[in-house]
Image (cartoon, rainbow, N blue to C red; front, side, top):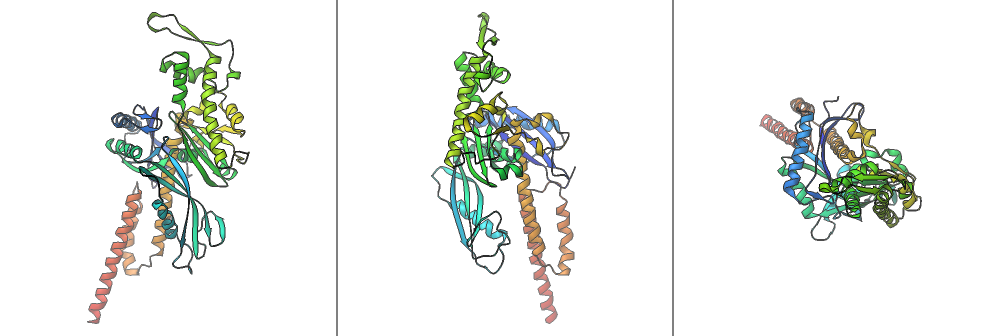
Length: 456
C-alpha cells in the first residue's frame, strides 16, 4: 500500500441507502478499500434530503459501520454525491483575451476562464454546482482538449454548467456538517458513477451512463471524449416498488422482495403459469400473484424511464446510433432481469451493465463490485482527480520559483517535511504553498536588509 497517498472518503446519500467508503490508491493506481459502511436511508426522497434529523442519524450509522470495519480510520472530510429533480444543466461559451500573448497559455489563465463562468446568470434560488469545460479554442483553432502550452491571443471554451436548488444543496451540507463531517466537494452523481464504470475506450466511442438509483435515474452522455449532457430523471427503484405495492395490493417490504427475487423488465419473458404466494395479513387467506403481472408492472415503469433517456439523447442529437459505446446501466436498479433487452429495444442502442470493479484493487470486499456502489466509488476517484491536479499545479509553481541557494537550504527541508504528511488535502496544500511563499518573501527581505547594512 502506498502510504504517501491520501485517504479519500466518498459519501453517497441515496434514497434507499447511505454508503461511506474510504479508499487509497496503491502503487498500480487501483483503489484499496480501507473502510466501508452503509445504513438504510429514511430522510431522503427522490434524491433530495427532506428530513435532516433522520439523514444525520443515517449518515452517523453508516460512519459507525465504516469505523467498525477499520477502527484506525479518521474521517474528517468527504466527497458527497448530489442528485434530485432540481438539478439542471446549461451550455455556455466563455473567452478571454490574453495579457501576455507572447508566452504560452498557462493553467492560471484556464482557471480564470472557468471561474468567470461562475458569474453566469442563473434563475434566483439556484446555485452553480460545477462548471465543466468541454472543448477549447485558441484563436482560430478549435476542438482543443487541453490548451496549456499553446500560443495565441484569445482562448475560449464551451462549458457545461450544472445547477441545483440552493435549499436542497444547503440541506445536504447541513446534514453532513451536523454528522460531524466537512463537505470537501459536491459531485453530480451521474458524473461520479461514470468515473467508476467508464474507461478511456468508452469515452472515445461515446456512451450514455444510466445510473438507476432508488429515487432517481441519473444520466451522463459522453461523445468524442467530451461530456455532452447530464440529466436527472425523477424516477427510480422506489417508484417501481410503489407501483407493485399499489397494483398488487401488497406491503411495501413484500413488493421490494418480489421485485428483487422474481422481477423482470420484460413481461413476455416471464412465465405465464408461475405464481408467488404471499402470506395473508392477520389470519387472512394467502395471496397468489402472477409473475407475469409483476413483470408487466415493472416493464411499464422501466419503459417510461428509458423513454426519458431516449428523449434526452434526442435533445443533444445523439439518438441515431452515434454512441458506439451504447448504454452503460449501473446503480442498484440495473440488476433487474432482462433490463438490457428492454433498454436495447427502447433506445435502439447496445446496452451492458457497468460494474465499478475495474478501478478496485485485488482482494476487495465482493459486495463493493455491485453496481449500487458505483456512485460512492466514483466519488473517491473524483477526489483523487482533484488531489492529483492540485499536486501537479503545486509542483509546477514550486519548480518555477527561482530560490537563491542560501534560502533554498533554509526552506526546502521544511517543504520536504510537509510532502510526507500522510493525508494531504486541498486546504492544507494551499496553506503549505502560502506558508512557503510567505517564508520565501520574508527571507528575501532579510537578505536585502543584510545587503543594505553591508553598504552602510
